[in-house]
Length: 339
Image (cartoon, rainbow, N blue to C red):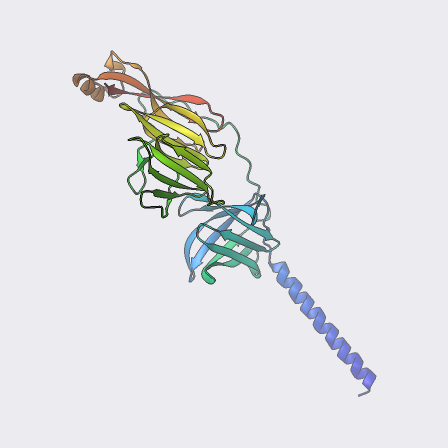
């Protein structure tokens, strides 16, 4: 074979191989249809040796953090939201979870259609696998309105919408407040780890008062808010702290906005106390003395209190809006005995 002919054949074969490789790579990337968008919920599922362990969603934002962007994660198992940080791009994600000391990493090397697969790494070892599933036309999450619609007012005598609640260590808290994870404090401290904050509680100077220190989980070194002798820690719901202080035979409920570090509501409040529709806290508050117990929906309890020599008072249920700071009666009331 002539040298020129051999050279041309070699060049043709090399060109063909390059074209085949290019088409293959192009097809490989074309198969990855993952489209991560800002403020769009991305469902995730975590596996351990092929067995599903947990699921939920991630929402990637452009809110800057010192080590990346803010990423909001919701877990179906715990029904909680966490503030994580990391970054994302075309067919890849990197997420850091400082609470569990782990990294979530995935890229287009393991992608099929609109599903991206990756690994959860702890202390340099792959502990779990996970998948992210996106949809091209997934709508963005709309911002929460400042004024949420109230449910219809209920008739007198309807049972309250809230119930008593306690943490695993028997501490009474606001019903539907966030469930904490266990954490370690000093010998005289109780520690409560939440999605956004860590709370350390220790005895204060008064009988029913505590020292409450709140740390932002993104800055666990300097306390974000410290309350001394303001009352007892009574739970957290997102960016709101509840404190309860005993006043003779009744209690005072105080609500703090943790971000702004200020008190936004303080009132006499009887249990049950609970969160309603995320942004409302409902409780019973004393109104006036009742002379005719026939108006009471709980006549038996009112009659027993009167026989015991107690004053019968009417307590009405109200809802405090923690967003616009308004107070709305729910239409429910009861009669209770007071000294």
